[in-house]
Length: 148
Image 1 (cartoon, rainbow, N blue to C red):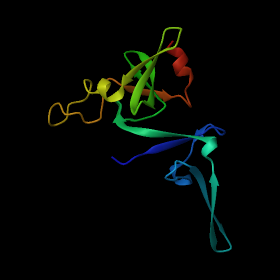
Image 2 (tube, rainbow, N blue to C red; image 1 turned 90 degrees about the vertical axis):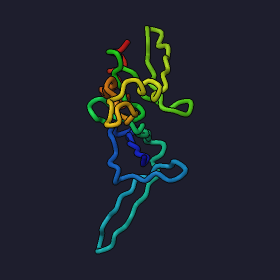
Image 3 (cartoon, rainbow, N blue to C red; image 1 turned 30 degrees about the vertical axis):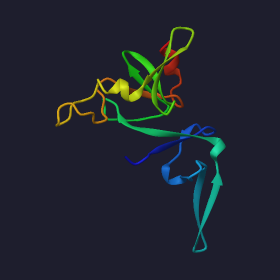
């Protein structure tokens, strides 16, 4: 699987176009702007690491074939939960009760029993029948409040 990322601009409150950014091996994020002037192409590069949030694709899709990323809000059993990368794997983090106690479920453990069978019958193919992406923590934080 090829690694995929999305980049959230914390200031402008929007996703950056993948063609506009470059992520180096150290995880630094740069905004790339190409300017054409007097028949010359100039490349402007600005380090924006502190101004953005980089989230990774989990390699999985929800029941509507939508890609699931870190920070996505997914509905499980009529409750909204957040997808996070913690403890070396992707997790579904639920917020329960008024105390906001965190309930962790390893993503793949949760999904392995709820997948769409493929031609082989039961082999896990990265698509789940129970999870549905309802938004993300950047654009739809109110969905977490609705889940209290």
